[in-house]
Image (cartoon, rainbow, N blue to C red):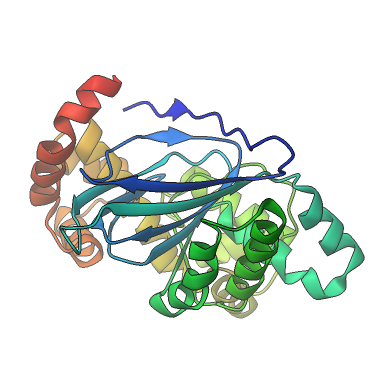
Length: 297
């Protein structure tokens, strides 16, 4: 399933794009990517969300910020209220969006935006509390004038910056994005993403970061909100999800390809992360996406 390139075109005289998408028949699987950041609030819908190598179920109020270049799609299973359409409210803005760079450079109070956007280069999923906090502002964008809509988007993004428990979709491929980030963590994450299928030790990563192992544990958890072991597990399981859907390789081969020498451990960690065994995951998603994948190819 090769992602297609989507061209995002703002309205004349507007610096970013907004889409109020209402789909009575459901959200189709449309595997795509684009150079813009994307903030999507999904309403009255449940199904599965695909971001990079990450595959997760989503529910009403799903709120995700996706960085440039990461392939992604939603695929609905059913509407919460069958009498109403599935809704996706989408905001797209570029990494060079003027007010972001300008505000961060001029107003130190806005510096936290840089950190959130840096984390979003791998995808961020916000919790129900964050979704509820910004939902009314997001929905008001539907009928707002361009100027008011911009103010609402700034309100939404600055509110989300305070939700530090947003979950990184850590298995999404990193994009070379010029955003503020700890250079030590950039080196560490680049190494992990390039070598996650091989043995990864804390001591070697601490050496890359030029810190002690105890300082590395604290630094890594502060930046990713998870331990290094959990991060690598997400990468391996996420890559396994893609291989299970896209390839005909045996489960044992896929386990080895993503870094597991012990098949039982792979099965346990996969089931814990995805709520299904690798074989049932493959069967369910191939049935659901088979016809769509054939069309895309």
